[in-house]
Length: 60
Image (cartoon, rainbow, N blue to C red; front, side, top):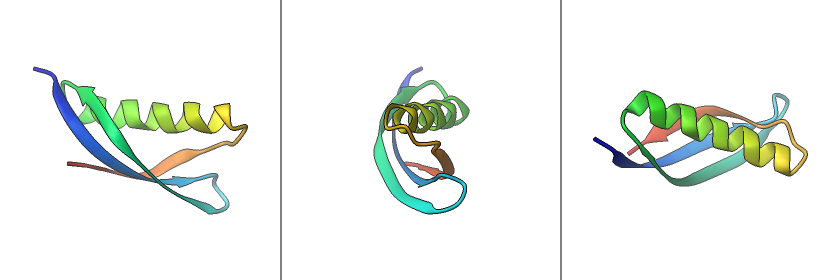
């Protein structure tokens, strides 16, 4: 059953803490939600020509 997760992620480029991102995602499990958030962080960073990764993801 699909659930809506609220998430907060610490974002980093590997050298600096670049800030925090928040949002919502629909997923069937916590694992899938974390994967989708990490994917969104990478894609959003690429769009801005940055090499971002999520260093910590909190789901609510």
